[in-house]
Image 1 (cartoon, rainbow, N blue to C red):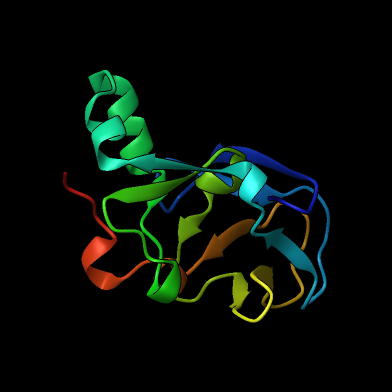
Image 2: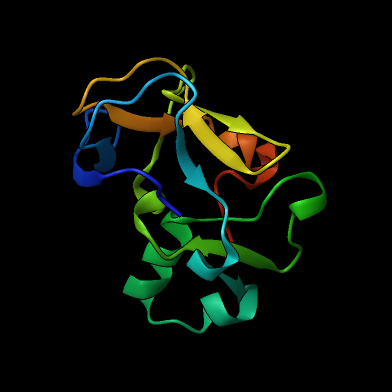
Length: 130
């Protein structure tokens, strides 16, 4: 669940990106995992979707990592968190202990909010095929 004022706009990284509408300080919470904003879909459910929807779901879904990794299913973010792009040096950092992304540094308004997909995705799952 996105915790900051934000907007979605074109990204120089890929397609659309998530941007902070206000300045953030290092350590400010940006996103918190909340199951009310994440839909779990089985592989069968995804395969049964019409092609355009299936492509969208696969683009914005992940299987999880470690103990949270799903077998035969995936997580789909139902809020704008799905527009957070990957960066090797992301603007947010994952706090495993409480499931929160925080600002990695002070960020001015208009900064793209990025994360490291490896925080929530096993390497073999980061590009999905069913």
